[in-house]
Amino acid sequence: MQEVITYSNVLLTVLTGIYVYLTYKISKTNSDLLKEQTRPFVVVKFPLEDNALDIVIENIGLRPAYNVSIKILNLEELKSVIHPHKLNAGDFNKQSDLFQHTFLPPNQIIRDFINFSELILKKENLELPFLKLEISYLDTYKKKYKEEYTISLQSYLYKSKIKQFTDTYFIEEISKQLKEINKTLKAKK
Image: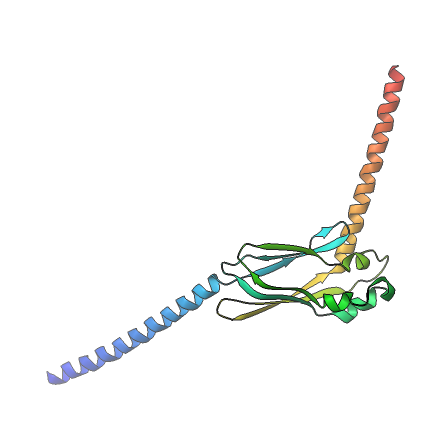
């Protein structure tokens, strides 16, 4: 009988140890999951406004982002596309760090423009390079996040040409319709 009690105590001790270990693992997983769900999440968008690229930075996460930095990774490639005398000497030095901000709270949107984009997007019949960016930021726990974006400048060039065509087309259509209305009014007199 004593042996059964000893074995059951040992078995109970082992099972309790496994239970404690599994509870610890579940608690740690939940803590990591909570940190990940409430972390900052910085997204960047590039809308085309008046033939120039805007940059829209937004923290869609639940916590603030610290030391937000956006850098151009293929700066030399972009420099080769733009005619050198069209830029001030310091423009590209300022632009390699496209954006820096020490604090970006949740749901805040920052909008700016990329001051050399208009020069690139005005190029005719040119193979444009991709714009390669690196976005990095820290969370409350000093964990660093780093993401890379690759944007096709060629697609923006086509978008701007389509918009120009559409605007011109509608103006021509309006002009034709006004002429027809004018003819109709003159014919009724």
